[in-house]
Amino acid sequence: MATIFTKIINREIPASIVFENEKVIAFKDINPQAPVHILVVPKKEIATLNDVTKEDFEYITAIYQAIQEITKELGISEKGYRVITNCNSHGGQEVFHLHFHILGGEPLGALVK
Ligand code: 5GP
Image (cartoon, rainbow, N blue to C red; front, side):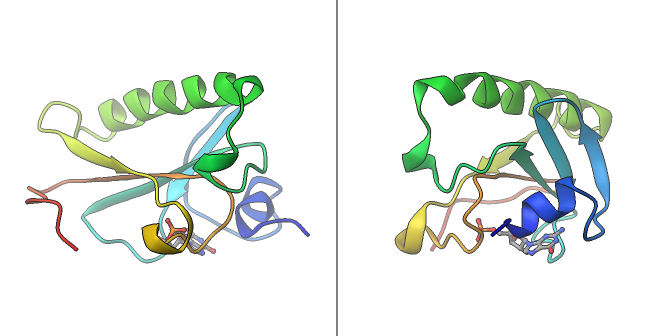
C-alpha cells in the first residue's frame, strides 16, 4: 500500500509543496514544530534510513541538494537550521517512507529528549 507521502507525490492528498524535481518532493509539515518545518522526501518508497542502499545514493544526494535550495529560498540558510531523520521506534518514526525534517526560522536550542 502506498505511503501517505506517496499519496502526496501522486496528488491523491493535498500538501503545501515548496519544492519538487524528478527525485525529490518537499512540503510543509502538517504539525509544525518550528516557524519553518519542511519534510523532504525521496520519490521512492524507502522505509527507513536503515533500508538505504548504494543504489539509492542518487536520492540522498538529491535530498541534500534540495535542502540547500529550499533553505536558501526560504531565507533561513545563513542563520541556520536543523535537519532530522527519525528511524524506527526509538527514533520516533511515524511515517515509514524516508524523510528529512528541516526545522528553522528561530533559534532551536540544544537537542533534548
Ligand atoms: P516522523 O515522526 O515519521 O519522523 O515524522 C512524520 C511527520 O509527518 C510528522 O512530523 C507529521 O506531522 C508529518 N505528517 C504526517 N502526516 C502528514 C500529512 O498528511 N501531511 C503532511 N504535510 N505532514 C504529515
